[in-house]
Length: 94
Image (cartoon, rainbow, N blue to C red; front, side):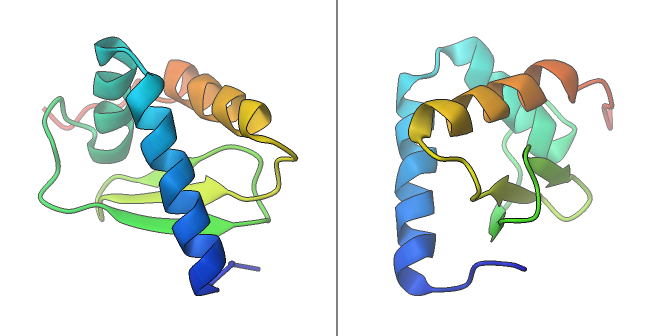
């Protein structure tokens, strides 16, 4: 089930912005690589949210990042994102 309410979506976008603010450059480059399978910014980024997943899923052909909404707090969400970035960036489109 995908969360589509405006309030929840805005809250999740703010959490992603918070995550990006506190990450160092290496993690930001990992996020870009994770989403686009390339070391540069994609032409667009589509964010979707789901309570059916525990870790972020990137659909790199579509520049889509699916984020989990089931974590109890920001720290758990951040840890899931960091885990996905560390273990899910092996594929590259270069």
